[in-house]
Length: 135
Ligand SMILES: Nc1nc2c(c(=O)[nH]1)N=C([C@H](O)[C@H](O)COP(=O)(O)OP(=O)(O)OP(=O)(O)O)CN2
Ligand SMILES: [Zn+2]
Image (cartoon, rainbow, N blue to C red; front, side):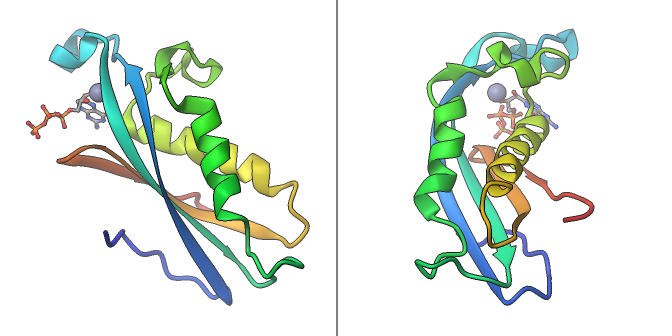
């Protein structure tokens, strides 16, 4: 799958596709059928950039990106998460929450890497992209 591209001047870019299954509901009458608890098989793509590889030759370990996201959200009810107590778990806000989790994780890496974009597909016909204004 080809994702929307954000141009940058970093030497390296990697992309990790990952999947997780989660339930949610949008607690607003305007959400129609989405007001009922229902589930999605989410597909995410995470874009990481940087100029420096670590001692293993990784920008960041692909498996670490997957772990951060799936440990947080896989087989959960998204509405239960602290991040979604004040905002509903929409495609947009879940993409942003994934960005925040990844950005927190990347702070522990010593080679100064950044998350450039999170693409999140909720259904076959619906997706959102979160891009921080500054990295
Ligand atoms: N901007 C947003 N709009 C909607 C969201 C959302 O997260 N952000 N979410 C929903 C529902 O939760 C639903 O999961 C997805 O809705 P939709 O794409 O309309 O799903 P359908 O399968 O019914 O879409 P088709 O057009 O039939 O493919 C609603 N809106
Ligand atoms: Zn939904």
